Length: 387
Image (spheres, rainbow, N blue to C red):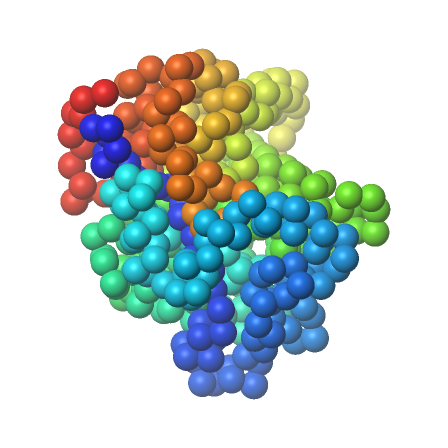
């Protein structure tokens, strides 16, 4: 709790290292186990996966330099955390510093590994399962405050649905997380993905799209910047926000929300300032072309968003009030992005509460109530909290 406000972080992160696969990968896939290479020159853990380096830019000079510029001020802040191996106890300590009551734990690198288009679907699913098992064990250190979010891959939507079911029912995961970019040419609103959305509805867990700056797929949006000036800045700026825009557009316009009206969808860690324009653009284009489209919609794309979608914001995002003016304050959740060096730890929640451009009711919703509704929690009752 912080200044009388209960706080739920919508997507805190773990830093995966070698034990994820060496200790948790199904023995049937040991021959395909990602090779852990330790910490790269870009100051990230990295792997060799079937001949590819993940993240792809781990040793690129054009990333090493900009990453060092970002990391230098943060090194002292995270020195003890890194020494402790980013373990669950260090995460709880960080949450205590911030005043975060509950954190939903997301991957950092595991989804990069399954972003490789050519992976055998069974191998990709085994990689996801290994991470999901490791994360469940991680959160078991304090299961009330740490809640795991399972990853799946669209290499085979039926296998993804089966892994979602296993992770939720057997391992206690509270969300199903996907990369927003295509996998082997398959977009999230492809009809064959309906088996996954149907399973998420049955399980009563949200689908969360969360980008990464280390994707390896051929359709990954930041690949076009490779070999061009200032790659890292453009890579990080585009990969999170633009990929989320396309995925959200597909779910709204492509008929997924029409077919699954109780499916809860989140688009996280890509800011929210673009949302008013994007919804307006989708509505405008649907008004012009929708009458001739094969998949019919009973409402505007923006109506579907307001009915069943949530979006993440940063603590200091300047355009947040504009998003609230357009879509309201009950569809926005927040994260301090711990322990990533571009995040706001250890002063994220204090920074958010100090904002003068948001009212206390909006702050309360964004810090707690909206996350309760997104994740469908019933064991954390919403309580009125003083400003």
